[in-house]
Length: 156
Image (cartoon, rainbow, N blue to C red; front, side, top):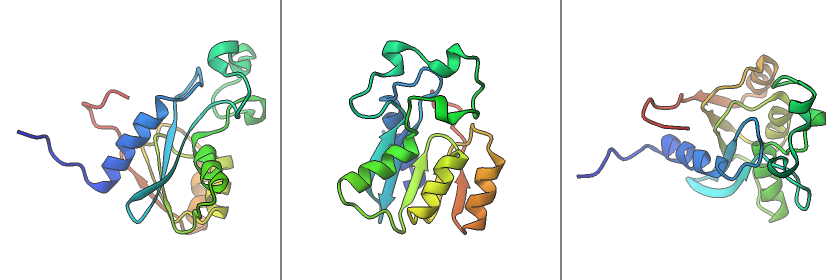
């Protein structure tokens, strides 16, 4: 009658997948969900800062310059999904201490440093991004990392 009920990790990862559909990045749609005590406290997707034009509308500078993924982040208009989830929590005065972040991709080194300083204790992600330094920093900080690959029947 009904499909299998997802556990909490898969449930929040599926919500992160949905959040990613709001992304305005031409290269990669990423979503993040911040959770405390199995309750959503904030979400974020990658895209231009409030009030700025989106890459969907004006194009991608990094693509135009042939910059590969994972390099020269400073040339991107977009704020990463993880950063936006943290910023949105701060904007509304919600503490991120001891929260869990669910991400459609492994966080990059820039996001990893912010996640560490935001007091996040656990990251559940789907992988699909290669940044060994980020993993090294997160492990050094004692943050639990959980990789749950996409299911074969899941389209994103």
